[in-house]
Amino acid sequence: MKILLLGSGELGKEFVIAAQRIGQTVIAVDSYKNAPAMQVAHGFEVINMLDGTELDRIVAKHKPDFIVPEIEAIRTERFYDYEKQGIIVVPSAKAANFTMNRKAIRDLASKELGLKTAAYRYATTALELQKGVEAVGMPCVVKPLMSSSGKGQSTIKTTDDIEKAWQYAVEGSRGDVVEVIVEAFVKFNSEITLLTVSQNNNPTLFCAPIGHRQERGDYQESWQPARISDQDLYEAQDMAEKVTEALGGAGLFGVEFFLANDGVYFSELSPRPHDTGMVTLAGTQNFNEFELHLRAILSLPICSITLEKAGASAVVLASQNSINPTFTGLEKIAALPKTDFRIFGKPSSRPYRRMAVALTNDTLETPIEEITERAIQAAALLKVHS
Ligand SMILES: Nc1ncnc2c1ncn2[C@@H]1O[C@H](COP(=O)(O)OP(=O)(O)OP(=O)(O)O)[C@@H](O)[C@H]1O
Ligand SMILES: [Mg+2]
Image 1 (tube, protein in one colour):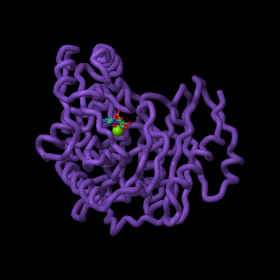
Image 2 (tube, helix red, strand yellow; image 1 turned 90 degrees about the vertical axis):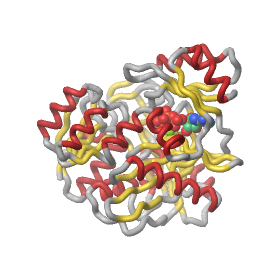
Image 3 (cartoon, helix red, strand yellow; image 1 turned 30 degrees about the vertical axis):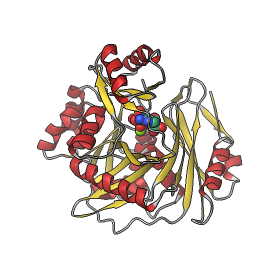
């Protein structure tokens, strides 16, 4: 099968490796040359994926069996057309298109499916935002409808913050329409990603929940399994099944939830492997999240997902702008027991760019905090140099 991978970051790279291992062909696409996934793919294309004409051109050129999006910032409206042409868009054109815009996915989850979410409103002006803040109460979180990795996102604590939050969201917004969502702040005890695998002609499967900690809109550490009550897990699985079924198609989804005193809140989802799911590269499961995504896409039955070990991942971030950064500390991290790492091979760095990840594991009986702490310490040994 021929796969056109749209987005060639570290998650795409692991997906390509999984595909290579079972003899599939992948053309990796991104906006810059030598992106991580391109380094291991059969071919590559450098285009602006928000440009529909450019997308059409490479789809016509490569005639893929599958289109696998790795990122959100794609002219996803074109996906409906590719589906009509008989190409399988993963997991479905609807899933990719809906999750690109917070409004589409939130209204589907809350209004259509009745899932529990934070109270929310939309706003297209600072005045509307003020009304929205009054409706949902303070503190609240403002996010551009089109953005990811926390871009343009801020918290409003007093009415003085409203104007600032509006400006910040406008600046961090991707796409032509400027609109924001304002959500009541959920005082959660923890947050989890529930990796959910939709299969063609086979039941939906769940990975053990992944806990994570976010800073500046990006995850810093993730661990599996996360601590969760049976009741909360049951509710999260039920919500994940409903939302993935409504979006349709086969593949792995990363469904994000907040765990609070008054239960589980649905937050958002990625219709593809999730960055916090890199913890599965630590050998926690019989298949990692990239292998699961691939198998589901190719309609290869997955009998069961088993948790083999407890594990953690911790990110290694760059601190400076540089071209062809180098790394030191590999021998130090390699000397640690039950520890591994991935260096993504990004051709340039900028402050806070994720460049590598440290991975640790241990028996299921080991306290997960201990395994996570080891991942953090391991990550600190890998240094990025310009
Ligand atoms: N309503 C909320 N209440 C409390 N915390 C929130 C709320 N919304 C978002 N957050 C915090 O901000 C983080 C990022 O939010 P969200 O996942 O909606 O943004 P994102 O830009 O899509 O992030 P990413 O693309 O990295 O998943 C959440 O993981 C959570 O820690
Ligand atoms: Mg998120």
